[in-house]
Length: 473
Image (cartoon, rainbow, N blue to C red; front, side, top):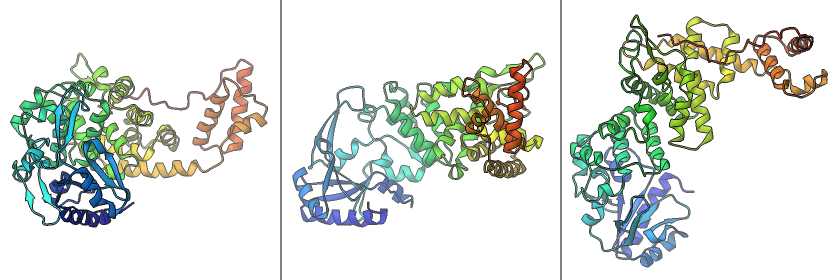
């Protein structure tokens, strides 16, 4: 597959072939928008005017095998590249779904008619591939420079309800303001029938490409469209927090600060999108756990566990990916503990157990940092992260030492059964407590014999499950 630089060179060769055939090739979309911002765009989209589908394919044929990404929609490509080459087309909405459009290719369509169907003015600009001439019929360049996200047409914009979420994610990515008339138009659009996959895609762009993803959610709130796909997040609005620890305000405000802090750390994360989702949904449990005591103190004890059902419900509204749901719920459950253990300078056994429970200890440390940083007038103590990273190195080292295995237990005379996993887990905790394999095996066998004689099994409560920690607020 071509590199980006090769595709750039190929796009010029495509434009030359098109011109020789009597047509004109125009860059559209991100190539123009991001180019004006001085940012490379890796998605090269070209729209060809003045050629029929047959003549376009003939012009492209000498450059490689022509592929049809959607022949009925007039979208083509070359096998070795990622360039999308499209013909202008007319669309007519015939239903409520994003696929409910009648589409017809029109090579002779005017630039004005072609760009009127674009969603936003900043996306409706075109640039001639060969000459560099900018075609901007809707004021996209001025809006881009002014930091305004504005729709192109009152008539065509509402035909695809996903544009509500696209407007919000572009506002976040560009740190722009949505024009009042666009906000008003979006408020009147019904979005409930959009597929969750399409909303998830726009969410991912906001979380991964914006310096301040919080703008995405604030814009959706302004448009009255936060609750359809993010009801559990919206429920955080107005949920109070202890002002001593959270002078920023309610849980929603804290969450917005945390997700922006997480954005500054996401390049360090092993799983950037999942990490950002964990930052977004880590405190949903405060909605059900928050109490105002008779003395006026606000608490949210156990929110990291009580919120797991809501966290999973919110995630399943957006995605069916089991790995994503497992990661985010695991991180939400454990997010309180790293800073608690660091603040208490806990023993190595505790931090080893914590990291063993985590699906990604490295990202858990980053989440703890973002969570602690998402508070006004309460800077994060870098000593906490230093402590946690030293303890993570310790955990990794401990995991290289031999541990009691199922074969060891069988060789010692235990038969696999309902209690077998408990003995393996007990041996693992003894390993984290510093016992070598021989000593751990001996102790597990001793506890097994004591249990068999009716005595109380020792040490079964050593492992912390992260369910009894109190919020330190």
